[in-house]
Structure formats: structure tokens, C-alpha cells
Image 1 (cartoon, rainbow, N blue to C red):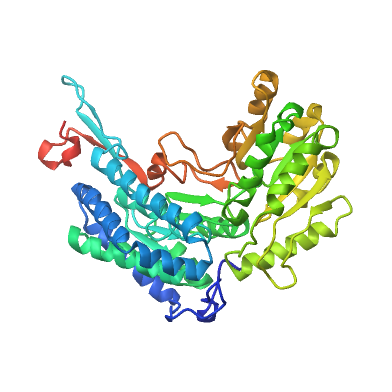
Image 2 (cartoon, helix red, strand yellow):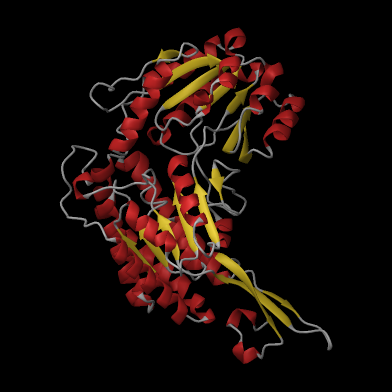
Length: 489
């Protein structure tokens, strides 16, 4: 079983391959269990009114992180190779926005969903709210060191629910994680919150397995590959007591369908090409498959699409493991007679930086080979030639996707209706004449999808994500003095 095991020697900069300055020691399984035990004790000691401290805590976390912005971003750029201006600065702002969002939800009690039902006797006085489920284990994502990092959306939504969090750092940016953890500890000291409400461990496979088996663990949050997500689900299923929430976001190919008329829109080619390139092609919402009548109507579209990718700067992938997976995927696809490479990547002989890669095939080949419907993590896209009258057949090939997209003319209503019918049960977000990359943090967003793109009851981003870490608790005829303030009415 391989999750994301690593040793100290794996902590190297993606910029120059140098060993990182600090020795980030791998915690033993027993140390991971001890950390989770401290989180469980902190949860047990908290009262229902403890949640009123959370807005102050998150506000202070934002202040502390922002005060160290340049240092944290500089460390992250050195570790990951991600651009400071085009990538890390915007993502840092997103992290701060998530802190403000969950501080606001905790302040307004919206996330706790308080309800009061009173009536004349003999009807009982009923008051309910959602409370935190207990300790949550969060595994950092490689591709979002801030947004899905120590103080990212998983952690902040769990804290806003009143849940202590133990974070497993990612080996791709351990120093960044340490700096963010220090921000939390300073904020917690000022807010009067136990430091055990957010802890972090550098651990390997054994440590992850130990954490998931801890009897007091109540929730698991993960963003990463399907292979690891499946293993985590198996580990969680093996517990004597099931977890209250297993939130797995595992990526997808995010198919994009374009009608013949949409192919004539010169803006669509550039829009989709830049979406493929966003984040070095390492976003879980990257459009990995474009399905359209390319041979009969897509000549100019393909030419424009390839022009944008040919002009793109080479990409440093986020880890050695991701680089190896990228090269293996391209080699496998290159061996298939049903696939033609129309834009070969470069950098394969030197293990990066890499140029983007585009292949093409047809709908019959897509239907015949599951490999063509697997995610290729990196700046890759597969163009699938498919007549419009076979769009429904193509849609039936997919299982669960985070997103599905349709580019069509406004008066092609039947195409839109058919698309919704095909993907309403297969995707978490349907996009029209746009791109799936760029996940908005707002009340209406859903970031998730049917298995195997994700697993869990709620969105992993935005307002709804707080509900992953809560459960309802109802009080019947309780004296006001015993109730938390938000249920006094």
C-alpha cells in the first residue's frame, strides 16, 4: 500500500533540487496517535459556547498569516517552483478569504443552523443546532499549498464547526506548512484557544493509517489522486466505528463538449487552452478531454488551441512522483495506435521542466479503452473527434466527474437539455460556455461529484463545506441557562 510515504531525503526544492534547510522529522505512528489524543482531549474539554471564540481565532489567523505573507510565499515558491505573482499571491489571497468566510459563518451561526420551535403545552420546546463532530484529520494537497494547506479550507471549515484539526503536511512544501502552523499558534495564544485545536505531523503511510484508526477520530479530509483516495476509503471502512465524515476530493478528467457552431467561436479555443495550462495543468478541474466534431468542423479551432499551448512556458511539476506519473502516462498513450500526438511534450528526457502535450483520438477509441478516460495530471489534453449525434453515447462513457462543460450556441437549446440530462447524475458542477478551472468561494458553489471523482456528502469548498464536520443536536424542554447563547432565542 502506498499513500504518500516519504523520508527526510525527499524534502527537496522543486526549483533546484537542493535539500531544504530544516530537518522535518517523520513522526512515528505512536506520535501521530498522541497528537490525535491531544486533539480529542481539547474537544472534550470545550463547551458548546466555545464556538464563540472561533471568529476571533480565525480573524487573528488571517492577521498573523498576512503579516508573514512575503516570508511564507517566498518559502513556498522555493519549495514548489510555483510562480509568486501568477499563482502563489492569488492563492494566498484565497486562503485569507476562506478564513474570513468561515469566521463570518461562525459569527452569524449560519453554519450551525440554529432552529427554535416553541408552542403551548403539551407541545415541547425544541431547540437544535449543528455541533462539531470531533477531531478531524486533514491531508494537505500538493497542488494548493495555501488553499488546501494547514490554514486552508478543510482546516478552517472544521475549526469553524468547533472541531480540532490534525494536519498531515505534504512533503512538497513542509517549510510552508511549518510557517502557517506557527501563525495559528500565535493566533491561538491571543484568542485563548488551546494549541491542540490545530496540530500538524510530518508522517508516512504508517502514520496516516494510525491516524485513521484512532478511536476518537471523527472526520477525514483529503484532496489528491484517486489511487490514494481509494486506499483512504478502505482504511476508513476498516474502523470498528465508522467516521462521521469521509471527505475525499480525487480529481477527474472534466470533459468538455463543443458543438460544431461552438467550434467556430474563436474565443473558445484560447479560453480552453489557458484553462488546460492553469496551474501547470495540475488543477483537479483541468479540462482533460475536449469532445467535438473536430475532423469535419474543427480545423481552425485546433490550430488556435495548439498555438496557445505552443507559446506556453515550460512547467515544473509539483513533485518527483507527479513527474514520474506524467512521463509514464505520456509513454503509455504514445504506444497506442488509436492515439496521435499532435503536440509532443518536451523535457521528458531531462525529467522536466515540461512542455504541454496534446493528443487526439476518436469516439470509438475512447469507448474501447478505459486508459483514454483517465486523468493525466499536468499540462495535457486529449481531443476526441465525435459527431454531435453521438454526444449522448460519449456522455454515457463517464462515471463521476467534478465538472462537465458544454460550449454551444445560445439557440441550441436541445443540446443544452441533452447535456443536462446526461450529466446531472454524473457531475458536481455543470459549466456552460466557460471553463471548469477557477473555483469560486461562495454560497452556491459545489466542489465535489459522484464517485469516483469524490466521496462525501457536501462540497469541499465554499459555505457548504462546513457541514462536513457537523451533526445536529436537539434540546427538548431544556432550561435556558443550560443552552448555548445562540439557542436562547
